[in-house]
Length: 586
Image (cartoon, rainbow, N blue to C red; front, side):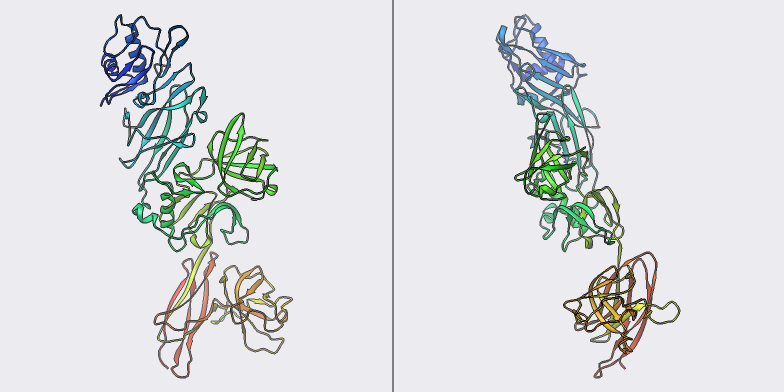
């Protein structure tokens, strides 16, 4: 196989071209045999050669008696095959097989009603086995290029001609998408519009150090949830949720497994779907945010195909998210374009049962080719609008909401006490008093309205943000004559209100508490029953940036087999606190 670029030896290139193709008397150009490929310039020069000859030669049926076959422009990168049907019954034209063996420019025929555009893909790829995918009009082109074709220099991955116009109509506006989605490598996507001459796409990939598991293994991971659609997520755990277009959940796996599983949905050759779309056609996320108002339908359907007509161009896309699935309340749509062009103000977007008109300027996005952004192995550097279940995120992660804000989850640290030597150890741990070597028993006071039977307990001041999400708040009912703190188990808290644990010892308030009586929240007030050593008692809290000194004790006072109590203390820092305690027999 030889590659005849534009600067090849003219005699050699033309001779090789004429040996590989036949030009019939009616102008039809067809493949005969051979494996060589040719710059489109040699199509033109070969035709001009035989139309210059006095006699026909070989299997060609064209000579000086026939009309002019072609013209060239732009240094041989634009070739026009001429139609002389009216006067000569000769129409010079090519077919798909012929054009699979040409590169470097465009070829038009049938009076411009049909056209092939030149595509050159520049860049470098990590794996030699990389086979580029090309999408045209929401369809994958059948590869005749394998791992590369017409690589005329070290930076060229591919040079081919792609059909861009047929029977007088452009094929999706001559737009194409080039993708590199090889397992073990980073992914890459490039959109370009072909036309006359040769247009460029740029593709670069590298080894992905977080993608090293066998594909079949990753495809077998169970339980991972996409949770597609508009969602308000409190990533920062500050009570101020922000908008995202999905909420990924690794569900019993881990973040590396999640990142690989998402990539497996888009790997070359996949038949899996992501956001309802065949992964081969998904380019990473929404390509536009569309403000809308006037509705004439009812309900949007997540991941449905929506359509619109813009400037006479039929267009379509996938509904990635809507801020309200009921069109009467919808103000924004996020779409992944499939065909056509972006809508503009006033254009109506239509789904199965809903429709809205564009209201303002459409924002265009270039989505991340791997959808999620970057997983470093220890942290997410999230892509636009990609959300995660809060429990999947750590303090080093960063995500970007649909408003473009960069958000960091809180540092949720673990406090764990590991005990040995007792069957039923009881643990008490609380924030240390500022002066005394004892717990701070008065970090808050009882608020108003704490009536017997209530399912919540209200304190006077806002609850310290460095408070476990569930646990025990303790109250000293001094007004009622109490001299010892009483435990109230809570399942959650917000502001200055604890929601009592309906499955705990105190699902409702056992009595009415008087405002102003002292309260405090324990870090741990729990036991470890059953099992074997070591027995772990743990909780968590959101670290606020300042260390917390804590004190308490571990006790086991069963009369039949008591243990000596053990005082405990420590400091909760950015990595939490883990203590190990051994209880000796009394």
